[in-house]
Length: 268
Image 1 (tube, rainbow, N blue to C red):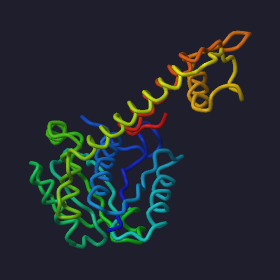
Image 2: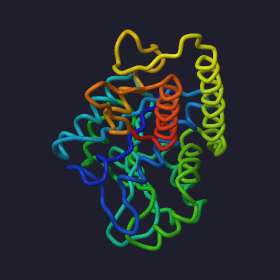
Image 3: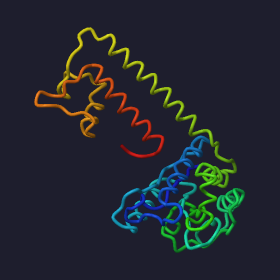
């Protein structure tokens, strides 16, 4: 199946961001959506991330989301949201309130987590539902401003994502998949660091590097420049005065931060 997943709204604090109550909608849509994407991919589906983090307005945000979705021949478009207004439970919006298996089963799967099933609603007035070329559904996972939020916090984004995955495909998401990926990344990181350490050990002519230029090893340039840009290292009038060991340290810092950023889905 070819599926487009949108983590609703822009990021928190930006124009077009979601509602905030006991939890922050923009934060949680991304927590659920990113895990859902990985779960669907692990089941063999083709998944396109149709999330827009920054936009000058809500209208622009919605247009960019749909432009991303309609750029692909999707079988299903799913927009993840959280509700507000003092209610309880989950509901799914479709065009004309049409009942189809993925929408109906998503309501049922989230209900199995302990949330009230509010059913399928008419979402014809919702931009992403109305303008999607593919069959579309907007999932309101639960409410941010009632005890729903506390219930959600107790189960976490992973179980919510797994329930939506089950609603879409009939198979719950494997909640261990993402951690397996992280273990692979960590192991690979360890191998790369060990390799770099060996390169430093076998250098026959240790040098001092004052500038990011042709004299600096290629494996270190990006990391050193990044450390300079972030203020982690700085030079004097004579340059950076970096030994081979310090180059290696810069690389370890840079790659570790990149790893953490990948795990928590942020850009560095």
